[in-house]
Length: 68
Image 1 (cartoon, rainbow, N blue to C red):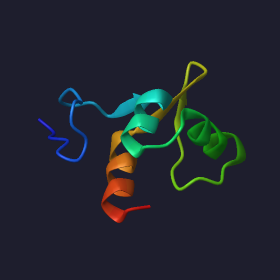
Image 2 (cartoon, rainbow, N blue to C red):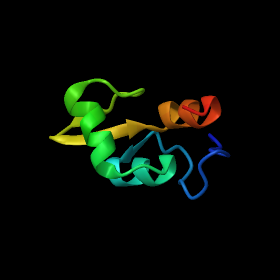
Image 3 (cartoon, one colour):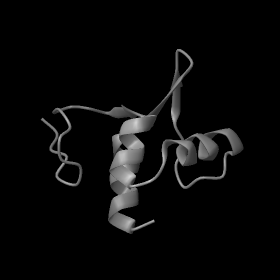
Image 4 (cartoon, rainbow, N blue to C red):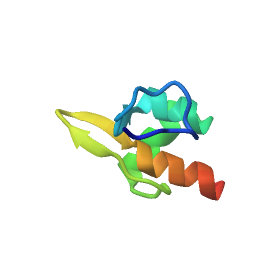
């Protein structure tokens, strides 16, 4: 079972989160993450599934670790 010590409140084995959840985790506005996706110029890229943007927990943890 994976432990997300950097991101409290996630269920075990969570691999992706919504744009709203990712924005909360990164202390950014959801629109900022949408712009990262649309213009492909953010520090991380989302996964698209059924027309929705999902953000990898591993990428979010890496950003938090690096302080990006």
